Length: 235
Ligand SMILES: Cc1cc2nc3c(=O)[nH]c(=O)nc-3n(C[C@H](O)[C@H](O)[C@H](O)COP(=O)(O)OP(=O)(O)OC[C@H]3O[C@@H](n4cnc5c(N)ncnc54)[C@H](O)[C@@H]3O)c2cc1C
Image 1 (cartoon, helix red, strand yellow):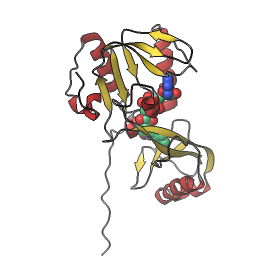
Image 2 (cartoon, protein in one colour):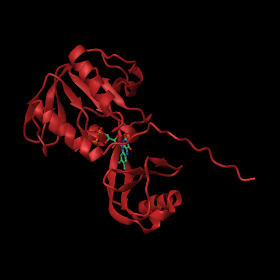
Image 3 (tube, helix red, strand yellow):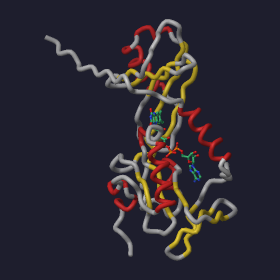
Image 4 (spheres, helix red, strand yellow):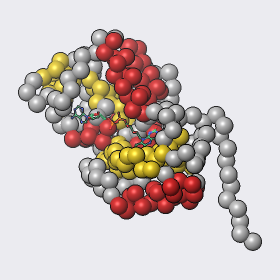
């Protein structure tokens, strides 16, 4: 007899539009006085003895009492950061579908992919996990995997319109755990390595970073996420 696969209903599970979330966070930060230096990436941390005095950009330095490296999978490309955040990119491809024939009320998972309904009627299908360097191309093979698995979950999607396809790069740490908190350089903190859950972990990451900066301690057990776990502690 064919064994049926276990099914799990998670009625409380919700989803959020990551693009809208990012725009909202940017707007909120600007309202609170954040100054944005867009387009001018950080090249290195600015060391002054045992302290991090800020960041070195392409043509200038930015002074800061506290520096938080949160450059996703690019964090290790900033000079001085690799020992604390040896992250690498894990590419994920996705497709956005639209059809009147399929109604999905909650996130659906199969062993291969997930489908996420958006309020505007789109159904997102994703995602691949590929170790392909800093390559963000959408590929035929990636789309084949996603679309075949999507149609397997909801056969009506075979007639759906493909509205958009894209790929992103997740920050993957060697143990696939986030890398959070202070380093052994005064004033330097890391917040990366969130791999497949960086959106979900946005609020707790923000809270921990705020607590470290304002109180120099955190309210939860975080040692296993320490940026010092990859390197021998320096004197
Ligand atoms: C296809 C796909 C599906 C996903 N689905 C989910 C999901 O369902 N739920 C979930 O929780 N997470 C999901 N994730 C993972 C999530 O997107 C990541 O964990 C999250 O984006 C990591 O956030 P981050 O801010 O650390 O890095 P990023 O989002 O990569 O942001 C890093 C930022 O740093 C900037 N930057 C890079 N280099 C420099 C530099 N030198 N100087 C200054 N700035 C720099 C970049 O331009 C970028 O804006 C998914 C990811 C992908 C690719």
